[in-house]
Length: 97
Image (cartoon, rainbow, N blue to C red):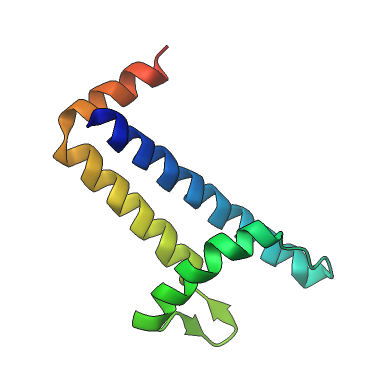
């Protein structure tokens, strides 16, 4: 069970890194560098549209969808770590090696 939860935490962290990378790439598009790998679009578009379906995330020219997703991912990771204390102990052991 701990292994599955640790894998889920790592997966959520991976998605968070992809969202952050997508934010950086969107800033680069402001200077004319329009580049977004297909795998990122395949992963993030369903997540973005799922959030945008329930929460209005656009205010003028600003899209707050990535920020909301990062906060949701952090909340889910926190719930996993707080609900199963063994996960926190295992994470600490892995990080201190």
